[in-house]
Amino acid sequence: MGKNILEFKHVGKRYDENVVLRDINFGVEAGKFYTLLGPSGSGKTTILRIIAGFDQASSGEVLFDGQRINDVPANQRQVNTVFQDYALFPHMNVAENVAFGLQIKGVKKTVIQQRVKEALHLVRLDGYGERAITAMSGGQRQRVAIARAIVNRPKVLLLDEALSALDHKLRVDMQRELRQLQRQLGITFIFVTHDQEEALAMSDQIMIINDGRIQQTGTPVDIYDEPLNHFVADFIGESNIVPGVMKKDYVVNINGQDFECVDAGMKPNEKVEVVIRPEDLDITTVDKGELKATVDTQLFRGVDYQITAHDQREHEWKINSIHKTTVGAQVGIVFDPEDIHVMRYNESEEDFDARLDSYEEDED
Amino acid sequence: MRQKALFIVPYALWIVLFVIAPLALIFYQSFFDLNSHFTLANYQDYLTSATYLKMTLNSVWYAALITVVTLVISYPTAYVLTQLENRQFWLLIVILPTWINLLLKTYAFIGLFSRTGSVNQFLQFMGLGSHQLLFTDASFMFVAAYIEIPFMVLPIFNALIEINPSLLNASKDLGATSWQTFRRIVLPLSMPGVKAGIQAVFIPSLSLFMITRLIGGNRVITLGTAIEEHFLTTQNWGMGSTIGVVLILAMFIVMFITGDSREKGGRH
Image (tube, rainbow over all chains, first blue to last red; front, side):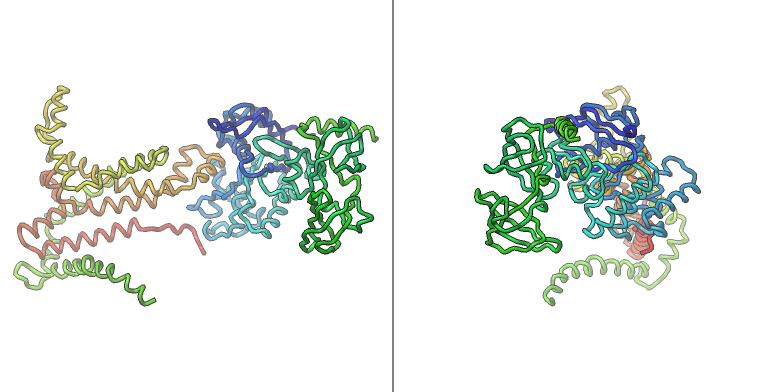
């Protein structure tokens, strides 16, 4: 566990009556790739702007390398930003854009030339230095914006929806490149996005933000497999979320039917929500199924079929299956105990982690 | 498609009748003397006469002075306007005087600056005595600048407002102070507005004649005054046209110098 390079302590932000952030707490370790993920208006960009210094926290403390930086102006912070619209200076060419930060710091001309060349090489834009910004494509501008930020060797690089303006194929390429660049440079990246696929693909740690609060923090696998609440389960990936009752440890009742599961540590007969991912559900014959359902729609998506079906209680199920079925058919749905994930209502992240620890220790 | 071509007719007529024809006439007239004989003497006179050359220098000098004074006042004004919350309203206040007739405004200043005018009354009230304000270089500059300021503020304001605010954040993010951001980002990006403003102020200032007469009391004689004199008083249309041609040339030179040269380091 490295030392936290950046820390938020009880940070809040309000504009007049409008509360944007409520009591944000987190720490960021040096050299990792973090993603702030949330829908638009969730406050994720505000967090980024507070780190960069474009906005001030209304309450709480922002620490950088252990020092309070609430009152340090943006131009004196050791962070650089890649802006959503790139914000490249239109009256300068590519090399001049990249050199800007170094020139401001008064770095020697020969050194600037060398570092600009290196930065352009890192983003695979060798030889583009003399080009005008207007002569660059969207993807190339994106790279210039990254080069302009990393040439200053910041301790933390902030990326604000940096890939959202690119088309799908280019975006996927850039995701891979960004991840590679981050490993290569060892700089802490804080990436803001509303695209959950992007977040899952690139991050070491994801922070899910909604309604001015951090909903859950964890690795992509943790967050996908063990979402803390309805919002996270719904926001990350596709999911079937159904109400249930926790009969006792390792047994959950859904729609009057008991199922074996791997969750524990709850009160007997506590009302809970149950998440099952569509890819964990499988289609079988009616007699072998744990649930019986009627197929409503079927879409072929290349890798699998996206099927929707409703059970006897008119509950709709999303199923991603590699096996084909027919619309209107009676089918059985099967899943394993490990595929069931139980969520308690209003459980905090600390309680969730503590509960997980308690019964996982029992098993050992 | 042919019908659409018809729409250009009113504008084409306008251009031909009121722009091209007058220009051609001025050029044509400039080759005739008082007795309607074809001659190059007007140009020879113009180029060899110390009076005309002095007048030309005078015109350029005063026009430049007016432009500089206007620019020095207008740039900060435009910059402050862009920072205000109700900037469109304040811009309207700055633009408002241009809706009033030029002559009317000039007469208003005669009233203000005269021996018994409001300004002198105020000075006397303050115990500073009465002064000759009208018919001085200072009052001429003051009124000329007053009239030209909106024409300088507007293009600079437009150029400043077009600058993407995230560029300013980017500059700060890269370590620049507010002053460095202004000098390296805001100023260069607002230059097209400054150039447009210079064109809008310098070129008309070259041929000012009403203000030079009414406020400057003809102490400042510019090419504009000379043209007016030749056409209305001495009736020497040939010489008047010659000076007109010189003015037109001067305008083209200014437009060429302040022309758009935005292609920057670009190889497309």
